[in-house]
Image 1 (tube, protein in one colour):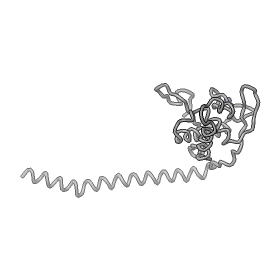
Image 2 (cartoon, rainbow, N blue to C red):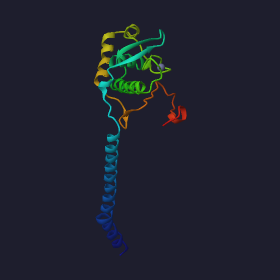
Image 3 (spheres, rainbow, N blue to C red):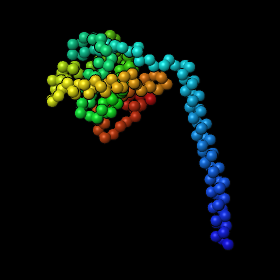
Image 4 (cartoon, rainbow, N blue to C red):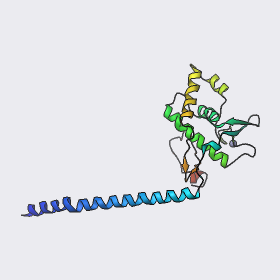
Length: 191
Ligand SMILES: [Zn+2]
C-alpha cells in the first residue's frame, strides 16, 4: 500500500510539479533578457558608438630619441604584437593580442598620458613596440613569412576592440602573471 502512495506522488511530481518549476525558471530567464535589452537600448541613446575610422593614424613617442612619429594604427599594431608575443604562438593567440593592443591604444588616445603623443614605446609606461627592421634582425628562418603572419592576424581583427557601454575598456595585459592575478582595484584603484 505504501508503495502505491510513493508511485502516486512520483507520478504527480513528474506530471505537474516538475513542469511548473521548469516553466517558472524559463520565465525568469526571459524577463532577465528583456531587462538586459532595455539597458542596452538606454545606453545606445546616451553614448556615442565606437567608430574605427576615426583612428587612422596615431602619434607614437619614441622614448630613446624623444621623437614623435605619426604612424598608421594597424601598422603600429604589427610592431606591438611582434614585440609583445612570440610569432610562433597560435594565430588565435596573436589575434587576441592584436585586439587587446588595439583596445589599449584607443583607450590611451582618449586618456592621454603624454602631452605631445598618444602613446609611447616603453612597455613599463604604455605598450611595447619594436621596429620591423629590429624585429626581423632578431628572428631566424623565414623572417618575411613570420612578419606576414603578424600582419595577417592584425588585418583579420581590423576594427575589433573590447568595449563596455560602447567605450573601449582599459585593456591591461601581462606576459606572465607569476601564477597569480590580482584585482585591478587592489593594484591601481578603480574597477
Ligand atoms: Zn608612455
